[in-house]
Length: 275
Ligand SMILES: [Zn+2]
Image 1 (cartoon, rainbow, N blue to C red):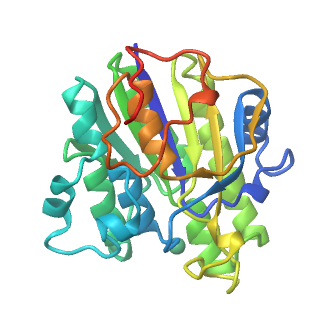
Image 2: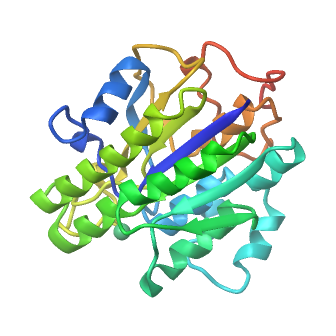
């Protein structure tokens, strides 16, 4: 049973992951593999980062920083992770919190990430969305499950990054992810974010700034290196390469990231070293 759950906590800053605010993620990062210096792509926006996760290339290559008519067809000229996985018999599903009309660009990117298979929008809070994800995991099927949790980004835009309401949203994300991880001990979890926030403007995250660019990355589950801190620079672009590699599939040469091999003590399938 090969399963990876990729949790994207929109706008989650690594410095919000403390024992007091996010006890589950803090414990997972300590017990398994944690990246101390992980960065998102530029621009540090959700659509650009989601498209990079979906295609393995940086925004200057995919040019999908805004939704449009050419969005999905352009993706097909790239090598989307979901398409590569489908070639290996692995399906990709997306579970997301309910997205209003304002989040249409995000929905576009998420649909692209799913490779058009299935997108479930469920829950106004991370715990409800995580419960919907848990229902999908109850089906004994090999897959990549992408779980998108918008809670922190919403609170950051409304009240400021690291504000009390933002930290409450982080705690909600922690409760949702913690419940999901505790019920899925046969699954590898990759927990990250698309960007930070509050670096230049309290309630924004687009401008170049270390606090906007720095993202958490926790890899946990069976076969993951224990009590390990990745001290070298890690990019969000390393995540799609890592997923394909973990499933034993070739990483397309045009992918701009590289598998984080030191996070794993064993992988499934033949190990494909990227060219
Ligand atoms: Zn945002």
